[in-house]
Image (cartoon, rainbow, N blue to C red; front, side, top):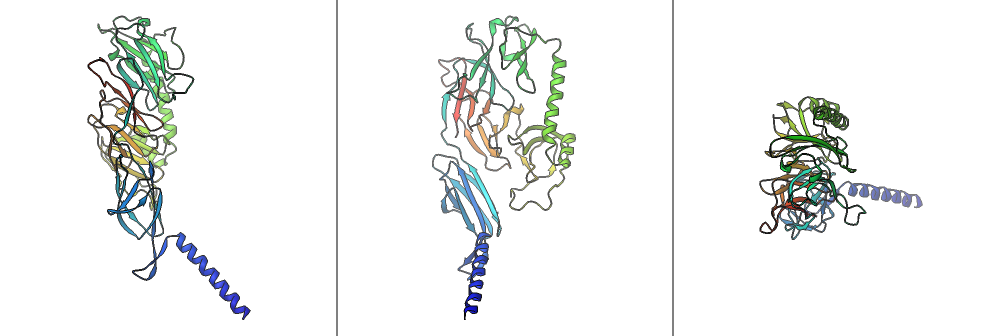
Length: 398
């Protein structure tokens, strides 16, 4: 009798282990089929959290949550009052976990002034949080070239706005700041400012972006040599990052890509194709539970793409007609692209889904930059009747 009980206990114990393992792998009891069937797990997260989840139009709870679902296709909608919505059709497979991280943006973002200078020209310091500002209002104690560092917080010991040089201290008279060309060093510690006056005369100076510029250093005659050296150094840095990608992609990229930028986490590459060609497959078969958006490996000349080295996925991006590469920037989470979109600013997932307008208020030209905490800085004039020139404003989209 004791032997029978021991055997029964062992069998019961093994049965419990099997059930626990099966449950962990997504198996659930199907009342309709009266059998144990395989399910998949949908993990839904959002920022901000506590957004409503709808599957095929039916409310299923609030983020952040894990949902056990039968295999099949589902239309997932994530909604929160006062925010943009997120929508995508996904396919659930048995025993696999599919994760959604939806970023929602406020429908009515806040707007806060950052400067009070009157700005005639702004230039982002490439993909950093720094902005070159040219102020020219006929005021000798304010007119000049400034550096605004968006990454500095209000409680920082150093102010975010730093004077680089007053206009009156520049030797070239009758300057037209709007016609200034700026070239940044690879480490962004200095830049060549190529100034022009109303008569068309030009003078180039090397200005520090970190220190003072009391002693001007003219580089008009050596500008080309310096720019060539900077370009070579910048290409070396790009190549170092590119070498972390699969070697087959590195070869194609070196020969056929116009590299726009890497994502902040350096796992994705935004580029323009210079030729018609087919991108080689690196991971075959594809990773389980990878991004399900249809990719495009047939590259067409002049189109824009994002390549994800983690999943070996390549996505065709909406063919924006950019006047400059600063029209599109990576969002800090490395999962979105922010871009100038016909008098408004929009965001799209890196796989070209879920395009959302994040700011359609007043702003000048096409200037904007991202901040590391997920906000946007624009150049706006909210009261043109009083203010002749615009200033920097912070758009609170998070």
